[in-house]
Length: 386
Figure 1 (cartoon, rainbow, N blue to C red):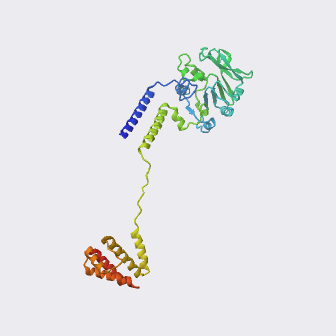
Figure 2: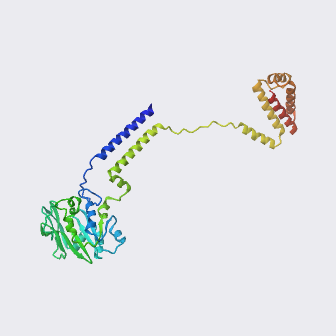
Figure 3: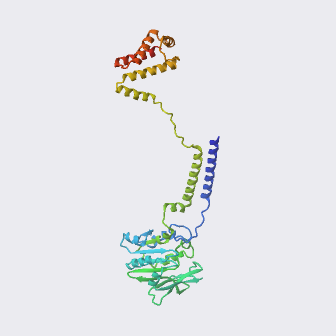
């Protein structure tokens, strides 16, 4: 009865978990409004669509999504074709060492395209930008395309340029005096700095008004370049992509992991009630009398002590007589022989021979091998006839 009750409880728990799982699976997934700028995200501020659009913008090269450091990426470079290194995110951070590495890379004939609201001072100084300032309201423009206005957001970032700026303004906010998209030569390559990264996100690439902005912005780059889209510098602060982190990243895997843990806990709870603690087997003491007798007899036999062996055998025989026939053995007289014959069923003559042999051995100081054998023969003969 208790076992059946436990089975019903387990069945009920499993059924509830199954119903909850179906409920979670069929629920509409919440929209991810985080500013992640990831090519793996299809939410409003991911760059999944941008990744698919790059092969059409650069038909003569190949597109690579890099999840390793810039140094590692250039070490693995397997093509002589110049590259354009794309970084699109809200923050480039204070990684001045990475910035210097990117400058060296650009100076070798490659192109750096950096779109971020926060850019390290190393790059701003090289580009001739004094600082990045905020602007409320206004529209974004790309030069040379009929001055079409793009209403991205109410807050804008733009560059305040040094008088020594030797580059070209490609885009701006409201007026050319507020540039947010510039380019300038560096060594044998070219640097593009852009201060409005959300223009390359899924939300605005699908927007009917702003959907062609990215095409116009990237049209300033030559089409015969290999494209390296950086994901490393956006994600390295999130920690290493351990298997456990990946497991919790996707809802289906997360709930499967939770259900597995719950199932394991239930199994342990119910299994622990069903099984008893291990009870060790306690074996009864072994009867080693025969082994002891064998050892003692072999000892006597080894020393050729026939008298002792004969007396021990006589004592054992008389003990059996006392036990089985309830006779006293302190006096082996005529009365004893008659009673032993009657109670055992052995003829009186054979009993007399055995008793006389016992009496002669008891009184002897020396017993040879033949006498000992004769004693053993009469005792065994008595046992077979009783």
